[in-house]
Image 1: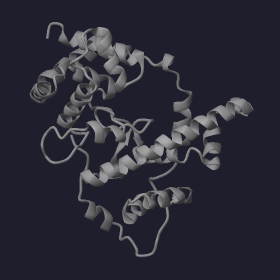
Image 2 (image 1 turned 90 degrees about the horizontal axis):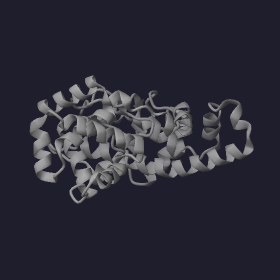
Image 3 (image 1 turned 135 degrees about the horizontal axis):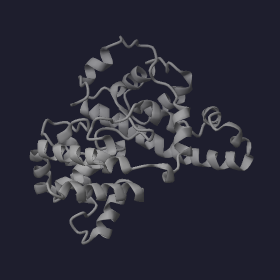
Length: 288
């Protein structure tokens, strides 16, 4: 239920880090390494990660995400009888931590289960992309050579100079956010002694059962099981983290459906997503 965890010391020692400065397996990451080290991260940790051949650019993922349209997303799969039944079973199986989170943060179990269902099918699918790759690619998305790789997945449409300018501007903005998230990801794995090369997530870099961006982990992540770590691949930590997120955004003060949906929009800014979560919540609560 949790990710493979090991001590940071063991991680650094494994692979025999040499005394001389070693740059990334892919030299395109060298400036990023230098930037991370200048921002205070351990040179040994940074070098160890970027020397691994599994670390690489994911330009096709970034391009695909940019082209994705909210209108094409289909949430109906989460409202089938099978999905509702699985959600109800999960609620019963995990009633203790769900109820504890409710008592502490005032967020009903059904809404937490609905979010977990829509986000990751109750933790059964948490993403397939190495988070370090996604966030590193985003961090470098303002670099011409990286943008060229991303543009190559657009085909003939990218020949339009105006479109290329618009996408380039968008990538520059995403680069700023991507680097902030990358730093928070490094801090997260350091603090919680997690293997950064084992963490996979979404096309945006969201991770774990509740699909938190790294920046949200520090603001809203909770150690629900009291083991001293925040592990979002742990169901209890995930449950408590969602509960605290909604609590921090005034779930208890929301008086009606419209106001509660506004709180849910803070979790995911898609009205289709929010409508699906809300409908699933009602279905879970019916005849429970």
